[in-house]
Amino acid sequence: LFSAVELAPRDPILGLNEAFNADPRPTKVNLGVGVYTNDEGKIPLLRAVRDTEKARVDAALPRGYLPIDGIAAYDSAVQKLLLGNDSPLIAAGRVLTAQALGGTGALKIGADFLKRLNPNAKVAISDPSWENHRALFEGAGFEVVNYPYYDPATHGVNFAGMIGALESYAAGTIVVLHGCCHNPTGADLKPEQWKKIIEVAKARQLVPFLDIAYQGFADGIDADATAVRWFADADLDFFVSSSFSKSFSLYGERVGALSIVTSSKDESARVLSQLKRVIRTNYSNPPTHGGAIVAAVLGNLELRASWEQELGEMRERIRTMRNSLVEKLKQVGATRDFGFVAQQRGMFSYTGLSAEQVERLRTEFGIYAVSTGRICVAALNTKNIDAVASAIAQVLK
Ligand code: PLP
Ligand code: TYF
Image (cartoon, rainbow, N blue to C red; front, top):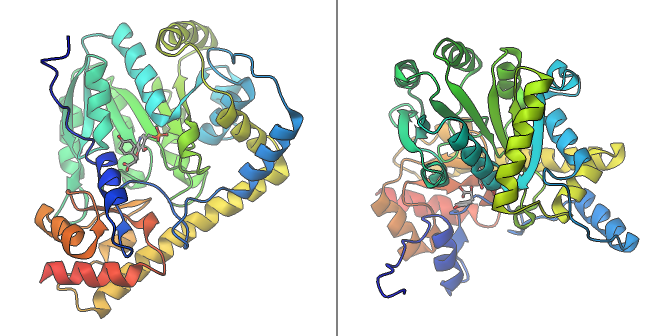
């Protein structure tokens, strides 16, 4: 049965983790995978999460099945985080949300649903994008194309190229957009660019699929949802996959959601009924723990304030590390200006290092980055940053 099965290639990012774990050097640094670690190099357990977990354990709750679309309070909290507490769309019943297995699970059920709805549509993702975007949509049976996005010359967005591509797409094309903190480049769209994209999406009848996995990591919870809210204001039907993996530091609990904005309450009910069918045949219903914690934290003023405070600290620490890396690279005489690193947003930076330079970082210095030159700046800390800056300067020589 299995004699012809070929060995699949490793995930380029998660595969790095395996190599990192096997590396015996005590000075090794993992800037590969997109995980936030604190100044001690640890994945934090947020206070609000810890307190909520304790209370839940003490309550010794039964573990029945959740509804197919998850915890109602969770779904409602997700909608408010994305669209704002006073969203008229929520009030009008035009938004439906299903708790999902992380942002990845949200993309997967969204892709499967779209395939049933519009099987011949193409899917467009940014060049470059999170590796899994292409794989997920191809896995759902779609043809996936790239729209121009990153401009290595400016370390920003090739907006003319991007808009040109969007304008060339057939009606119904599904366009995956990073809501904020673009993975892997760290280069985000400017407000006026979002406005233009919305205009084109409307005129060309594109299907926007916003993926927001880092809400709160650029400027704040509300500020980072600006693009999502502008899509809502524009009276478009669109999809949003969102994730609490990063913002709640709950990576392994798989807490995310798929939200869909439709044109009416009646449409929402019909769409949700179909989405539930997709969920049922994938995994029946989501797990309880992560969703219950997030719902409890977001539903309690004190816990929510504590969460926002810690999320703000994570955001600030990343900003400090970005500035510090730029400074230190200057101090150690790096032969390039890395000022752009301080402008990029979220967990990642496209450093412009070549695959060979990244390879040297790993073999000579035990510093792990993605071969594309992406580093996770959220894994820098006051203990490893000097070594990282000096190693980067050396491989640039
Ligand atoms: N979308 C983007 C752009 C991401 O960077 C990630 C990262 O993990 C995800 C989705 C998936 O999120 P999750 O880990 O919650 O599945
Ligand atoms: O880009 C990252 O590093 C994160 C984590 O298949 C991740 O988004 C990476 C690869 C993958 C799943 C998650």
